[in-house]
Image (tube, rainbow, N blue to C red; front, side):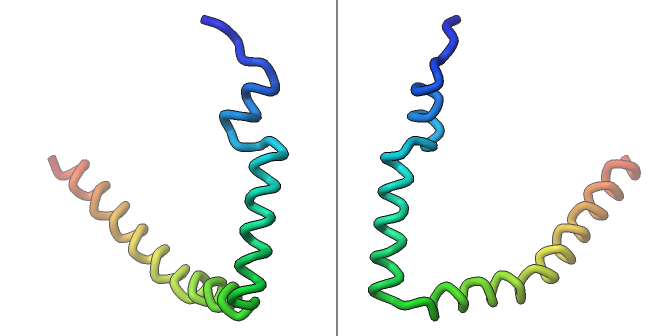
Length: 71
């Protein structure tokens, strides 16, 4: 097995300058086209859905634990 160089790891993980440049350009184009209103709407929706997701995951974890100990 061969170890990867730092440049190869950057290329695989997407941490290189070329991928950062592409993400920056696409983000700028999105802000220019749609404005910042869409971004704040997404953040607001994430904050609103957060407690519901936590309740759902807790319920599923409780159910899985219940099924595991009952059998």
